[in-house]
Structure formats: C-alpha cells, structure tokens
Picture (cartoon, protein in one colour):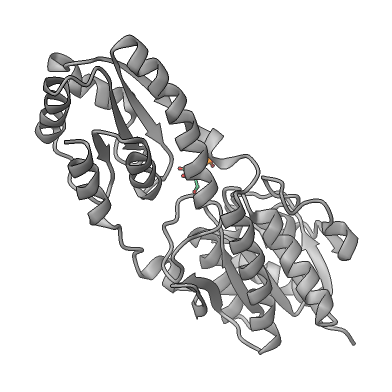
Length: 320
Ligand code: F6P
C-alpha cells in the first residue's frame, strides 16, 4: 500500500505557504506517496476536513500569497483531548506522516503528535522570523519587502511636509521585521523587544537629524513593545518634527511571495518530504548558511533566534 502523507498550514498565513504546499505535494507524489490536504490547520484535522491532492491540485499556486489550504489558530488542539483525537483521526484515515507548515505554536502541536507516534516534519513559515533552526522563516522576506514598499511611500509625504512618521510593524514578540525595514528605509530609531528602549536616545537622534538639516524622520516600532500611538504620546512634549502614526498591520502578511521566499518554501517543502522518506520524525527542516538542516521541533521555541544587534548599531551609524 502507498504511504499517505497529510499536509496542513497552521497559525498566521505567510507568503510562500502555497509554494511549500506545492513542493510537499509534488515531492511526495514523486516518491510514490498519496497526499491528503488538511484544510484549516489543526481545526480542519479535528473536523476531518480533508481534500486529496494530486499534481494538478497544486498547479497555479506557486506565486500566490495566503494559503490555499486555509489556516486557523486552534484552541482545542492545545489540550490533551484534542491531540489524542487527532492521532485517532490520522490513524483512521491511514495518514502515517504529516507535514506541518507554520510557526512555533504550530510546531508545539506537531511535537505532541510526534510523541504519540505520528511521523511529523515541520516547515517553518511565519512572517515574524522568530524561530531557531533556520536563518529565515518562509514569509519574512516578503513581509519586509511589503513594509519597505509602504514606508517608502510614507517617506515621500514625510519629506514633503517636514513630518515624522512612527510606523508600527508586526512581529508579536520579535523585532526582526522592524530591524530589517528600519535599516532598509533609513530610520532614525527602531524599537524592538530584544533591545532596551531608550526614549532619550531616540530624542537625541531626532535632534541630531534636525540639526544637520534633515526635514523629516522615520521611527519603526515593533508591535510587541508598544503601539505607534503610545510611542507618539511619549515623544510629543518635545518632538522636533510633526508626528503622524501608521499601523501597517495585516498588509504585511499578504501578497505574492518574493523569489527568495518562493525558493525557500520550495526547497524546505521538498526537504521535509525527503526527511519523511528517510524515516525522520519530530524534526523541522531549515536552511542555515545555505545548507538544509533538520533540528528537533523543540528548537523552534526552546532556542531563541538571536537578534542581530549589529543592525541596531548600523541604523544609528547610518542615520548620523
Ligand atoms: O505570527 C504572525 C503574526 O502576524 C504576528 O506578527 C502578529 O502579531 C500576529 O500574527 C497577528 O495574529 P492575528 O492574525 O491572529 O491577529
């Protein structure tokens, strides 16, 4: 009997998830497996919301954003009963292996399934880039490019009106998007959860910019630290520029994946199936220094993905 592999996307959608679904499906078929698409993540797994995937089912999705399998954040799957029910459902449907495309929350659930004998391989996909075991998560590059595109437009207005924009970007508990976009857009200061926020330093950088004749300014704040409006309140009393706030929000999650994310997703999706073929389980596949590596699923949340403090410093140096 052919082996059956299930594939699902879970947690927040991330550009490149479709490319990963396609790569899992086609690599599995190439290796003589049957593929079952599980809709709406763990929620759909518990409701047996399944769809058979053949080569053509994943045609035309490579370059599209979102996830064709849809996704969800599933409360029930956080509980023992939910996980045990999922194991039974997988057994009943002859699904021996599972490819989970998602972030660290999704991998916690995946790990519980692996502990109960399901063969599970994780594919890291979240715009936050907050997972160890890979240099980049699928979706991060696209989210940064989207944010940069928006911030460049804001910069036009900032320089035309002698204004400052405080831009709130996503990243829940992580400042990767904020740091990357801050450097790419020439921000004066970036507020991230990993580095102590210093209001006085921020003010001095704004003064410094004003003194050298810069007529506008950009500040990026990661949503996990505070909102753009809270930051504007803190700055207001002696802000050298007229502030405006913008919350980029879910704009950052949508859109066609960049070629970087499409290639990463295709590579990792395929690598996940190869790991299944080798008999590996309880692992996530990632790419570190250009090499595909498999690490225990727990790496994703037990080991913190280190923030590059050099970027923070560089933002200061280059806005001198
Ligand atoms: O984890 C990805 C992410 O986009 C975070 O950056 C953000 O805080 C969160 O999801 C938003 O989640 P939701 O779409 O459920 O509001």
